[in-house]
Amino acid sequence: MPHVVTQACCGDASCVYACPVNCIHPTPEEPDFGIAEMLYIDPATCVDCGACVSACPVGAIVPGHRLPVGQERFVEVNAAQYRDPFDGAARFPVDPSRRLPLAPIDRPRELAFDRPVSIGIVGSGPSAMYAADELLRRPQISVTMYERLDRPFGLARFGVAPDHLHTRKVMELFDDIARNPRLEILLNTEVGRDVTLEDLRSRHQGIVWAGGAPTDKPLSLPGIDLAGVSSATSFVGWYNGHPDHAGLDVDLTTGRAVVVGNGNVALDVARILVSDPDSLAATSISRPALARLRESSVREVVVMGRRGPAHAAFTLPELIGLVDSGIPVVVDAADLESVPAPAELDATVRAKLDLLAECAARPEPEGRRIRLAFFSSPLEVVPGDDGRARGLLVGRNRPVVDDAGVAVGIEPTGQTTTLDAGLILTSVGYRGVEVPGLPFDAARGVIPHHEGRVLDGADPVPGVYVTGWIKRGPSGFIGTNKTDSAETVSSLLDDLESGALAAPEPRRRRLLSRR
Image 1 (tube, rainbow, N blue to C red):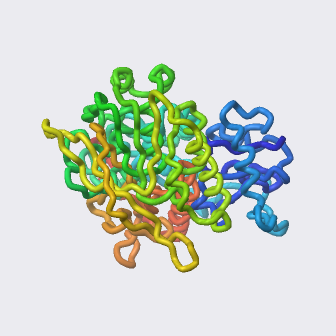
Image 2: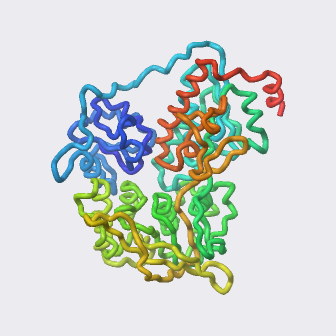
Image 3: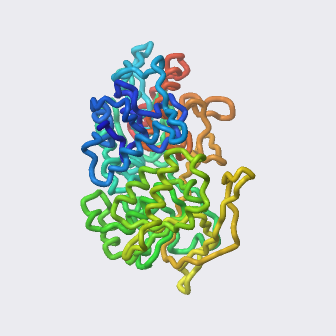
């Protein structure tokens, strides 16, 4: 049986370039790559050579005959991407004239000079590590990273759920990169507190800002500031031991928690809240958080989205992992009745709906469970007598369809209900924050750029580049940062060779070293 990509896929495309028969899609050159929920192996083309297994940094590719229990669904998930059930056409037809090269992909681009070059990178998350890896392929270049926390790797360490052990393995790749003698990582070093951006610009030929998107998109509701309401980002940081969130006010004495939003982070949060604490003990979960979870009274977590199941933000691999985890998942069958006709859905959405229908057909479980609620909008956080949140007023929505019967949006029905809940977590997306001294697009929450060069209006800011979520917005997976950082580094190398990046001024460089 051919190899299969499973739920742990990080999307960095290492497997794509290792494959000798071009059977893994979408590739970075294909338009679907930036929006695909995972990569897929064509069972008709795969020759079972195993090259992709060695290339994958998170152990996400498994021989089909060795799939672990709970991952059998991925055989069909992969195969379904290469056929259309209505006309039999291939979704990713292979043009032999455009076949990708065999691994190794290419040789590192040789620079047209031999002088030493110093590059500073702010941040040490996935985009920073991929940028450093690309830069360090050139022997003339050394890199210094500036990380404000006491541990590196950003969301790969503090944002991935502790029970997603395969996904967290990407830190082993980052450890390998960090061992390069031309890379120095300065921990507990915050730009703006310990060193200024101008200091860095005078020390290095180029600066790559890889600060990520560290805050949440705000949710404006009456009562949103009550105790008991927090962001899912803060909660994730709490159970992952992020120092910024160690003191988070988490009320686990309530019987029900509500998560507003239904992306992958929302499912992670819900799963952690109702998982058996003994199953989490062998993970990297924060020990104080684990102790609190052992005493938790939460028995139901409602994960709510304002649109229907066909537009749910969670990915198919994440849903499969949840449904097959052993945690009961409850879905109201009525939420599945108002979805577009199958002909209007791609294979991924059809697979999601089939899995949700499977959950809806199961009897109501006892004990801890996760309830996926669709067509639900939060209207108001209801306070209790003690001034803390005690519930959430929820409005019911219905789909709006055009003359052809295609769903084009939602509208409120006027029906409301109140969910009793002492813990309410908002999970409606991440957002970048403004960097003092750099341009900022407040509407999008990103630093404006062209191919990674920071722009002030239409003009590039000399020697300053950007990568990761603060560059493109909070989209994609850990590995998506690889191609994103490669674009930024390519621009930086072009500027080095053109002479656009000047050498740092020696006196200022010594001053920073002493500091």
